Image 1 (cartoon, helix red, strand yellow):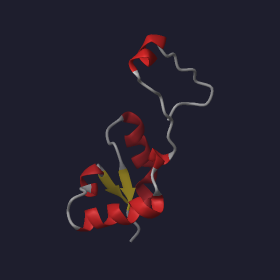
Image 2 (cartoon, helix red, strand yellow; image 1 turned 90 degrees about the horizontal axis):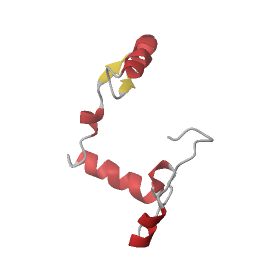
Image 3 (tube, helix red, strand yellow; image 1 turned 180 degrees about the vertical axis):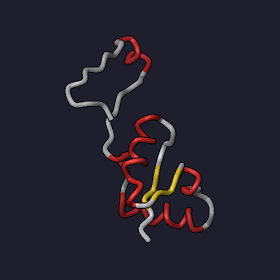
Length: 82
């Protein structure tokens, strides 16, 4: 995410080569269409979401989990509620 107020510099000649810039919100997904498809891919073993999880933590470990994210020790933690 780009912080609010951040300015981005663009080089004009790039647009002469038929390039364009397009923003997106939440990946510009079509949630009602895409989410069932992603779930099906996951269930079929075609979308490996589990590989994206660096660590599973309990709710009691949430502060340690945030610290690990801030230091770059992990990329993504998931809180497990037992």
